[in-house]
Image (cartoon, rainbow over all chains, first blue to last red; front, side):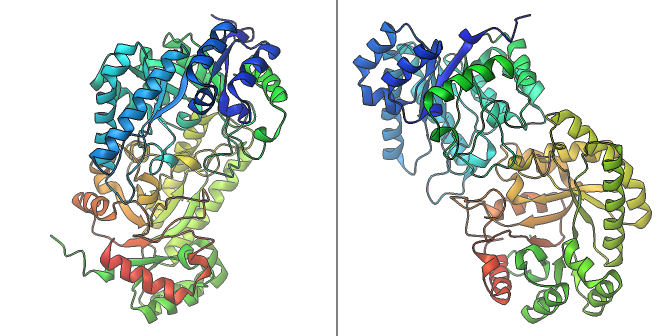
Length: 276
Length: 276
């Protein structure tokens, strides 16, 4: 069994955790902290420029666990869906340019004014199906991320590991799962669904659920500060054969985003060793 | 098929919707508005006194769909669990005294300091099992209410209709389900799980999911103001044979709780006729 306390090479820093940093600052900061992998969001990659971003990452020999994020498939009409598809193709190009191991996608919610959840589910499936050939040709695996059910209306109507796995089964090669403990920890069926998801899990994210949680989006905790049994869930995920990177992704407007990013990285590294 | 537009006798007002009112005010207010059923929380029943509350309700010939709420089973130790059981027995007594059709229970979350979600699930099952003989003897059906997964840590670790139905199957006679659209609307498996829950559904609650939702607990919407397809879900529930009352329960610190309660009741009545 792998020694969980001694594997800091598995730690990847998601750029949302150190939100004020540019891509260059993130790469430099990780080098200073002895961290060898990152998971950037599209904003900092685009701000750097694709070519420069790729060179920066290759020169630093830093690993890119995933690019965050595309998706957001449901739209009110065909023109809206075409705009989404075009943007997602650009996200695939960006992921390829920086050598990301996968592109994370969130489903998207209900189109404005709609109450048709079943229709939104169908749009997500169709949107993924339309994007997949392009992603396969580019050699970029897609990772659908089930988000917590509290985001069903406005961010993502794929809210369970079971639903994400069903999509993988239906759409086949090239589609996997982004498994984020924050979104799935509460699921009474988590053990069985994690086992079922198995090899479809292609990226693994951690943070923590705080009690109380003061904001639906921006009050996520540093691993160890909340109630998620991180070691237990990680063991379940690694039992499926997952041996990849572990991204720390923390949206925290009132706490971690206000701190010195170098301190945040040191804390991530420590928590990775002790509680993740 | 029942005419959904003409059934105001099915409307019950949950006391949480008009939070400033006493039981007496709630009963009088419903009489003024032509509403024939209520769903009080324990606080206003206790404040009135059990005997007076029962008389008030009988004299007004008002129907009581349910008493809200008991439960909160997980505790850190045996003494804590005994305190919970004793309190839940008092809630059963209160429900009997006011002729409530059932007692709503929420599961409770993780005991302070615990990350053992599986252990909390087991405590909920054991707590229900311990309470059931008392409730059966009192002739008070218990209704376990699955709450939205965002409450898993601190309010209720039973978060899906499937889990609630499993508990009913395991524990048998005397335990049913409180089905609140706010908590279950996002479930991709809702149609199948509603059908499976079937006759176990013994009380039905409505409000709406607002976009954006600004607070995890106190920003629920008036039916029709959010994204839940209320008529669709009601049809699924009534297809199981449910023909009981429909409670409007709205936690809304910044909106409905600040309005004139008589206006709130008129709005509930109107929305009941038009969108519920």
